[in-house]
Length: 346
Image (cartoon, rainbow, N blue to C red; front, side, top):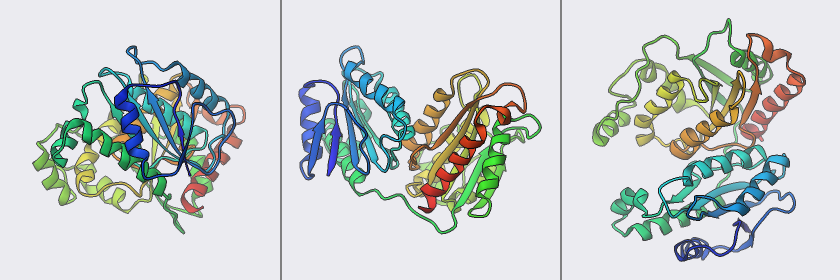
């Protein structure tokens, strides 16, 4: 049975009608909070926002998830957010997905349906479906519920991992942590690492849709380079992508960002529905959650990679080499490696 978690009281008529439409073919229960852990369930987080972009009851849900690791063990989730303005729906969705993942929830690709005030974000979907904006919103919500209820993470006898980074091995704490994780995975996985530091990686320039689709169908991109020669073929073969993410100004590094942007050409012709994404995030001071949220937004919610439970490792280390001396780091590295194997092999 599907569990609908919808914090707060009655919301707008649009939200209530859309939620009813999305759920009409399913057996479900509704709760406004999570008073206790809930395991092995399909979950729909349905969050309406007020004029300020806030739902005060939502923060009680967020607090529960952040303080109860493992409380959503074995769950598969989706997120529906409805707001009266153009802002805050996506940021809330990313924040919630990150917290739920760290609490044990898995998300299929594209797990967020967000409705802005005038629904203009459904313009393309409405045009493609030949329907109104309101109908496109309802169809998207219903599709999300269907995908949550049917999603089963792919399992593999010997997973193929693609590791992307743009760091220097001599100084990178992120690569140092990955080295320890890799040692745990080596016997069970096929691992390919690609460095993006050669200075030739151009960012996406936003080619017209038809041009991007044309190149993508051929497994190429107008700008060529390492993305076409190495990354595209590797991603097509990979069962999971591991991003090594040092925190640069509370953001992903420029090269990693460019690589993610350039995946658009491949995504148009070969969806990443069956490919997982993991990340190791290391901050010098703070803000690792901001970078992890960007991975959720870009790779899971935008490009459609599925998001495993506890998909990321978040650490804080400044000077080179200090990451491996952090208190308890050995146990956390072991746990992260074991989690990857559990998510991909079962």
